Amino acid sequence: MQRKISNWWLVRHAPVPLKTLYGQQDVEAEYTDHTAFSWLANALPIEARWIASDLSRCVDTAGTILEAANNEYVNLQTCKALREQNFGDWQGYTYAEIEQGDPETYMSFWKDPAKNRSPGGESFEDLVARVCPVPMAYQQKIQCTNTVIVAHAGTIRALVANALDLDANAALRLEIAPLSLTKLTLYEADGGEHWQVSWINRISNG
Image (cartoon, rainbow, N blue to C red; front, side, top):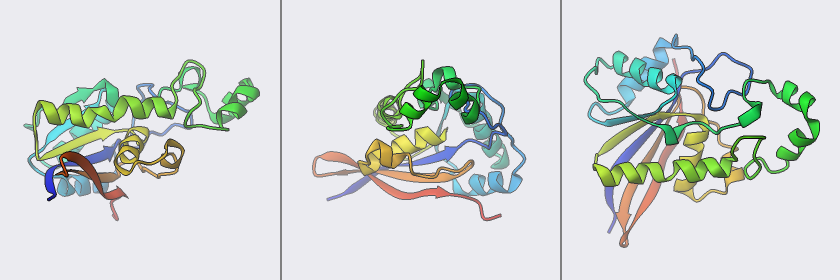
């Protein structure tokens, strides 16, 4: 028999107006899409635990959603493990600049982008290994019916890949738009815990 344990609502941060590969850089996002924030405020559960990547674009996105929901009493927790993939020496540069600076390393990276690491950075598989234990760690600490995570495209791809047992390269093909909503549900069945994906990458139609 299957029993639902908890719902996990995954929100990608607001759009960043940069053409560079910013990764774990703490860059500013834009919070002007009031329709999207209002939609998220209405779509997300009123009573929930809120966790955000500790980078400001995620913390501020969470704060803007909560403000739109008139829900100012939430204790927002931050989690460094939910950060975006670290692209090391490539952060702060455009793809064209990276390729021009070291074409051999750049071309080699794209032969297997899930396994390969940029200079001084981490691979997507490293990101998956870092991110995927987070929900269970929080679930075991304090059980909640609903948890909202505000994080990054890479973070959400990693969590969906874990839920669906996806190969890391396949997970990189998932589109996760800014201010999109993805929902996972954790179930208990057959003596173990299992994930179900309710939807991926829903966005406001406004």
